[in-house]
Length: 307
Image (tube, rainbow, N blue to C red):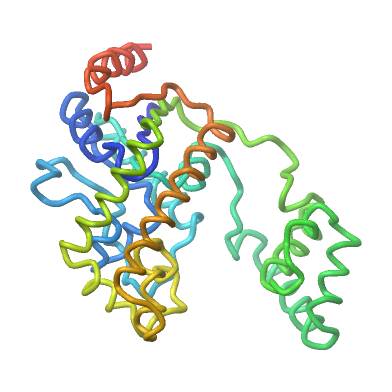
């Protein structure tokens, strides 16, 4: 099954390219963004507008209330269904997003931590370990993990009871560490992964400019939707979490804006590192300073589609 993937940091032209390629290659777009699933959060997540979409179907956007939890396992399941449906229609699935973990979990047969994975056996174990933590303390629970699975203990803080319990559950029921699967994950699709990038200074300037445009478009008003929901997952996203000190009277709006710019630049750097080190990239493209590279890219895609 062929899957075209367009990834890369914010501000490098993923949306425009995805629509252009969907038009040329009869595609439908699946959002691979961890925040675009939330309704009402449009500006801070840079959702495609109706005009931009140009009639191309977009999937996995606006599917949750902003108070809901949405995991990588939820995305993996939903996106795989969409890929199958789009392919069955004779169209090309095009996954677009910057969340590296989402893209990786989709393309490879990663077994993610769905609570139901081990059924009742898992449920009983979780209860047992939570009771143990209640009676003996979180550090004692972590010591159990250290004895059984030092690899996981090294990566999970003893205060994170949920993750410690999950690691113990996986080890007890599967015999292998949650951080080192028994077998190397295999590719599930014939994918063509494009990562868009540009010169660092150009990228950072574009990110800063994008944040200014978001504020002009009403980001502050949008962020107030989350004012009383600081603990929900959506509130932890860049573009929203930076507002909470402002809501509490601890910082100015200008400080919020600068914090969003800084966090966005740092995240862009992490995104690019992820794709460089952890993914099999088909091609890297800079369409910002070399827009003519689009023609060569389309030729490469055509060759891949005909293989």
